[in-house]
Length: 122
Image 1 (cartoon, rainbow, N blue to C red):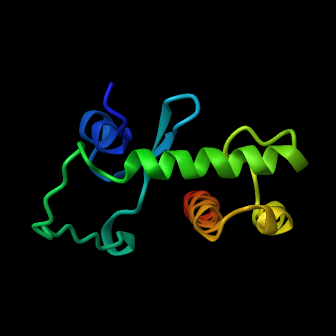
Image 2: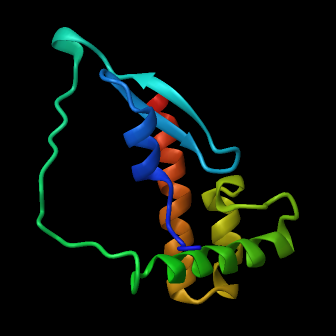
């Protein structure tokens, strides 16, 4: 199969007006998250950048490999880590020297985005 993510498909199929979609990529579950109404409603701007995306030849498979490498290294010191979502920035910093800079930056981005997203939902 084609290595690709699930975000576009999920929001297209499960998205509802007035809600954000919190996707759990481990369980493949999702939660609709109300994001306000009336004066409390945030403004969301959707733009067309005219950037063409192709699944073939994309960097997605490389990014997945980098994340898996980060998990492998984290798991050596933290056996409870089965995915980057199981790690925190402290754990990552403790094993930083065991990773290439690219793998470290990829993991840092994923972990911080998970934390940012969960904090926004709360």
